Length: 190
Ligand code: GDP
Image (tube, rainbow, N blue to C red; front, side):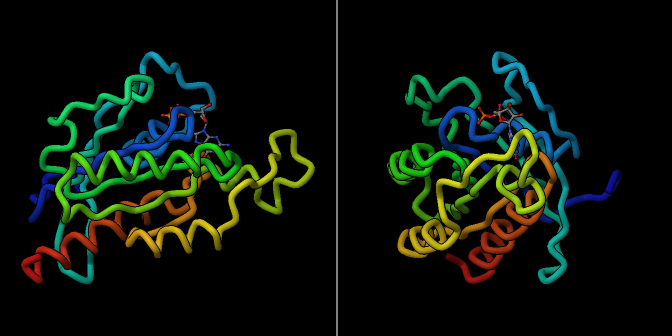
């Protein structure tokens, strides 16, 4: 969509435990690539992409910030949250701990971010437990059932999707769903 102007610029933050795939989701969104062995010290921190929300007839410029390198400190600065309209709260469907910890990441977001922020819970790495991966070297057991995550998301008022940065499944969709929700709030004056 080069040369196209946009109607809105939306800032997104991507949060969750280390190694759940935050940088990979960002690289997949902006670059349509997947790196099997990304260098953790070179975590992608920022990515930008234009997306279209046809129902609203709008072009949105996403500006996404990854929490690369900050997980261990848990002292994310206010500037990181400032102005964010959307948040991807990421866990790994093969890691129970990452799902449990999503609660405290959400608490952080609620403490620091705008109360109207739209948050989408993203269960990443579904490729690892796809039926088709049965027998494959990388096959891992799912530790978080779809229904359980869906239920928790509902209770917390979060959108929800399962995705894979590796295959690309539902990655664009996650950002589109969240953007659609944000534009809807803007239109309703929320
Ligand atoms: P971050 O620390 O949350 O930013 O996680 P990274 O994006 O650095 O990913 C951590 C590891 O998980 C890397 O080895 C990635 O290649 C791998 N990874 C990330 N997303 C996926 C995915 O969807 N499927 C699989 N199989 N591996 C993934």
